[in-house]
Image (cartoon, rainbow, N blue to C red; front, side, top):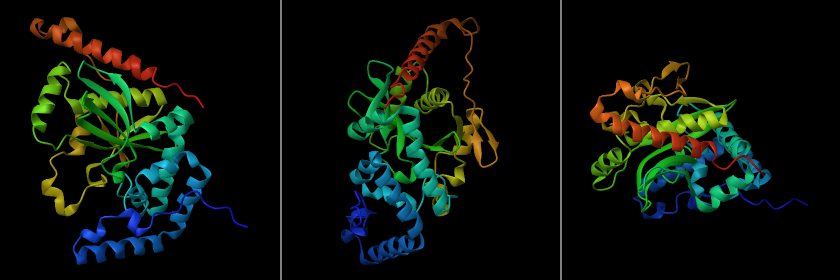
Length: 296
């Protein structure tokens, strides 16, 4: 007698429930991709289902959004990954978060979907999230949000074996008045641009978790498409270089140290802003260091 599985691989209807509303040509293309890939990658699909039924903590991640299964069939964080590499990256990512933060933290994250890491100002905080934007770029994210829950900037990531933290995406807001929101946030953060604030967070998390911090090369990023090159405004390679990154093998190696100017070297009219900035960063460092110590 076989034991009933707690979860099975998502059906086409579960993966793409709105497909019936699409033009027939797109429906047929989507179905061909799903069934073709599911046939080609049957071994990996079965392995992921077996993993989830063995490590049932993570079943809600896929029940909440079955489309997350599609990362195994198509793309997970790095476009260069084969199906087996995607499988290993997905399962290792989930196991490593458990290892770093404990099962109770993971259960709380799955239940609440967004947890405050550090309150930066009266209006802005850094949050640790289940990534709600696109699972092709990772299942977890860090973002800067205001008190109304509006995201100012997002960055997704994944763990990779043996002990690496890969930043897989960084993106600003797309809503109306997005540019003004980023400008206002920079002012509130004492001159630190939101995307660079997220880099500060990743440095602290990598240090906390004793991980090597790495960045995805531009053309290997999960959403990169040759046909869309001209539309991509954000260049990952340039951003990693701005953060003192060095291309080392397959990924950009990112330093964990962030240089600070001594206050006496700063022009007197800017000294107050820098003092407040450093105080904010020091408080964030303390909060992240003490955030949900490993347990469970």
